[in-house]
Length: 106
Length: 229
Image (cartoon, rainbow over all chains, first blue to last red; front, side, top):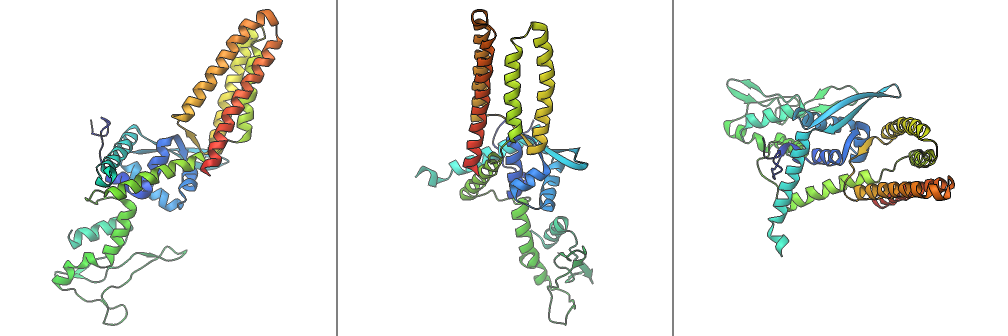
């Protein structure tokens, strides 16, 4: 069981990349999202999104599902349980960093 | 970080980044991976200059140590900013705050998406029909509800494909949906009691209230979307 599985804060380098963090933030808010929708919401090119999704898939944080719509193949993405736990642990770690900032106390 | 590890990382991240060796020394025949427009061909930017265009020269050991400060270093910093990988330094409080704000902004972009109007009308029609079906004999009510349930599944699938995602209901949305469902169930329960004394017309009132609940929740979602847009 990892730290993320236990619901504790854990900084995650894979998730922390700006675009991947945004991908995870969006996927955390949904059950499943289509690749094109993510691309539109994040305002990134298909190649950039594809690259970041591939990294998340390789890490086991995101799963893909292919479905045909209007004779075209669409890719649907969702966070795995491990990915969701890692993302939340990462967000908790970021919050800890922010709360540990002396400027917050002032 | 050594030059080789930096170059290995850069090569892993971008593709062709060549470091050739001659007489045991690194050779300055490496450069940036440039993509030719429409052709997919790569171009190399020579960093060791001074012996003519396209010439290459061997680097001294001191220069080799400085490799990471040169162009690959710039490339790596950009790529690592984008990838966030391999950086052993945790973010500062300011960076962490910015990252958290970015996640909030990303989530809010989802709120700007509204469900199609036909989905709302479909749900409203479903609630109205279920309410009116309760006035039918029990057997017909069961058949009608089963058929409507199938229709509801198809409606949700169509809306999911149209919108491109299915939202995880939580927070304010969850409260609104649970409250709306509670009102619908309460109104149907009240209709069952009033049916004995007032007859079938009660179910039209029940249907109207349920449709109003559905439309109210939808208006709430649309208000949120307008606010987020």
